[in-house]
Image (tube, rainbow, N blue to C red; front, side, top):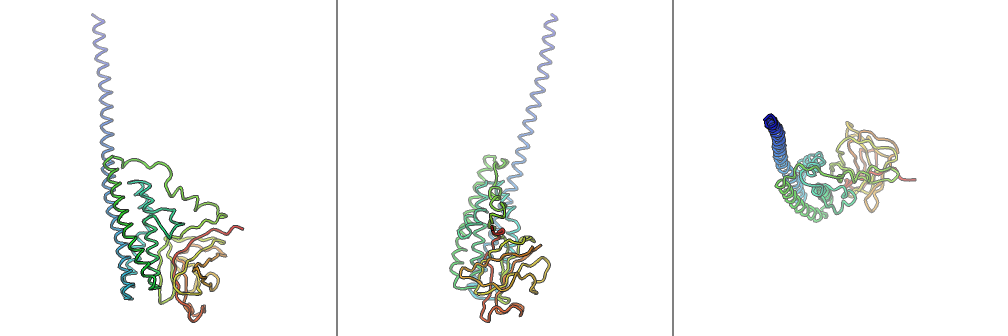
Length: 334
């Protein structure tokens, strides 16, 4: 009799304990599922909002570039001036956010789609870019060149048309992949392995003895009145003695002056001129060796024309100068 009572008590205790443990585990699992669902829903809503914003930003920059080119084609100088200001504002917005946008695409879609937006390999293949950002760079340069030389307008039109198709396809593919991941509940998966930036970093951050080339990211502009072109850097930058700049010069200038303008210094003075007049060779690439350190540089400029500031004669028939691109190189290996 006593044995049966003890077995009954033991069975009750075990049932109670096991039931409590099972209930706790089921509750934990239910909480985990609800939490994952909540996080997934939040990530999905963030993704939809991001895609809307990226589509708007891409469309705005493209449309302003297209209007800018149309104005250049029409030859309306006032319209060109007005649209240039509006367009360069969109360039500044784009350049200040493309790293953030690339990272968001990597988290929401894949490394492949992130590289389709911005591929660091395009730094060295800028003539035939495979990513959207560098296609914008190529089209931008083509339009700026067309402004200075009207015979280049057909090239600019082709670049802008190719950009239109690339942007449209990119947005469609990105949206499709995002929705596919959302349906499969994969939006919370963490990307594995190094991203493209980490893989490319050794090429840029390696020893200066290897003299790696780095395409400077900046907003380009020019002025017919001052016969000059400029590259506004994304942030004030320090340059070291011995470094080199490869400046691809647009316009028709045969001789130029090159300036590194520190932050806060007026554009109206000849401050920051590196050396003296420099001849522009047939390939239009001028290499500048820095013979001292330059701190907090906000702009790099080239000046053409007959006589900048009235103190630097470059030749009576010397034409204007613009900047097409600038590459930064480490000190040359000896």
